[in-house]
Length: 198
Image (tube, rainbow, N blue to C red; front, side):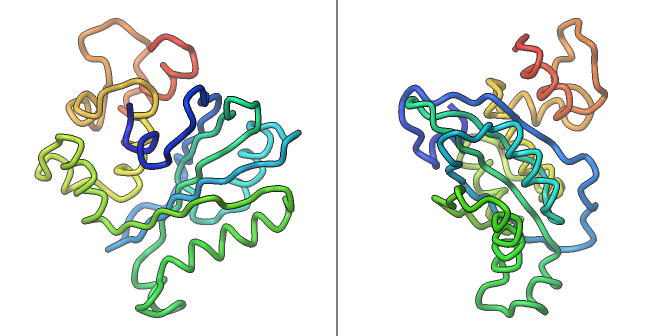
């Protein structure tokens, strides 16, 4: 079970049905902050529609996934990142992550039925520590960007061992098996999950 599935404490029987990866996310230009927001959607809303709409209104969007609880109610988890210096200048040292929270709040104003159930906040060192706690040596991922560290945690949710993602970084998730390689470890994992092959 992946880190995000554990920390978000999904009820047994919850299903992941959708994911997205913003390959256009701005490259890192220094220290960054990141957040993840667990969102409960309205009862009759469709995960794929709402994730597409919400993520298109988030300037700091990196990636995310969605699904349904055992009772059929939809949910999503959206990950964002922003330059730490920008966030600190705009929001102060006390709560720089409020920049990302504010971005999400503005996007969610278009969907009054959606509710933020939980917020996770990280800096680069925090994400590296998550990998360490998952059994990955810090030195293996210390050079990764915040966006790639987030994508790695999403890839882990796709039934792929985090160690395999790290070993394949940056080019290929499945070097030992024949597959239509995407030449990017994350795209490989996500394509495999979408096609139901992994």
